[in-house]
Image 1 (cartoon, rainbow, N blue to C red):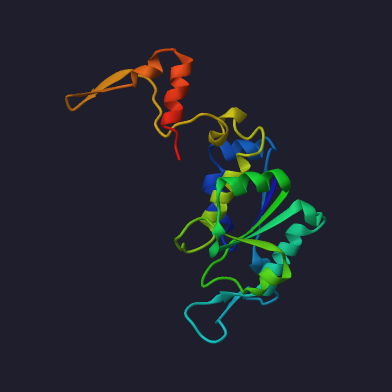
Image 2 (cartoon, rainbow, N blue to C red):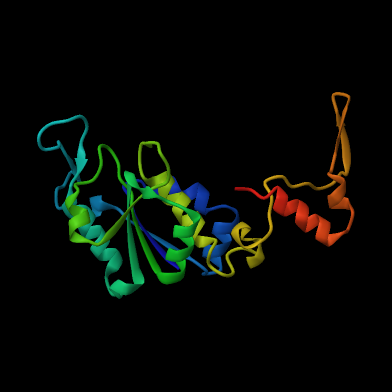
Length: 216
């Protein structure tokens, strides 16, 4: 799977992509991530990409043309049916694990457009067929964090990204509460034990316990 990130702040991704599972997935060529900065597509020597909004209002708006050029660069040489373009917006539809799974199975190329300031000129959505997506009922200072969330959720759907594909929580019997050694420990005079059923070795009872306490 190939992720194409349209962002003004490419370095915001370095730490997250440079650690743990995603780093290994990139090194093993299970996923690929490329970045496209709209500033690289303007002729202005100052590399300015924002202007005041029409009809007034606070803040600045990112111009459509450099974002369109960045998306076009990401799409170059790729079949439209293999590409999903995600336009991040607080007013977009709720991002879910189901959306991540379906999108990851259907598309080889995921283009994520990260907004900043007061947003991106809405005509970008008219030029391209995009999914307007939000990761939650809140507003952030930019689209980089949501892009990382979406990248992570979709990347883990790719076989081989997780050490064991059965580790996908949505594909196994999992609970929000998990336990490991030691079996018992004491903290401030109080004893904390692992639930007895998990120590019983009785698979049917353990599965029943897990389903009963299954995370929503």
